[in-house]
Amino acid sequence: MFDQLGKLGKYLGQAASLMVGLPDYDTYVEHMRTTHPDQTPMTYEEFFRERQDARYGGGSGKVGRCC
Image 1 (cartoon, one colour):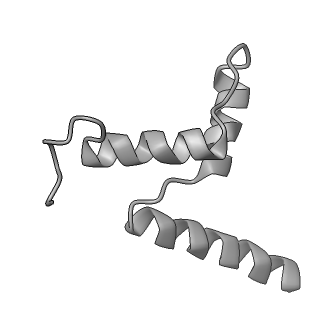
Image 2 (image 1 turned 90 degrees about the horizontal axis):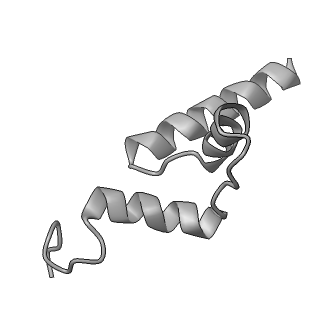
């Protein structure tokens, strides 16, 4: 029973993160390991920054910024 509750909690946490635009790093690492074993996955910090830049147009200072 507790194992099922733990799985449910993880699933709900992932769903909530995706709803607010936070991708799942563990899913990314698993994808890289199975699909691209010859490439080194990004660190969590690199992954987080890349996802932010992709979503908000980071770096240019013009696209997607309110301030």
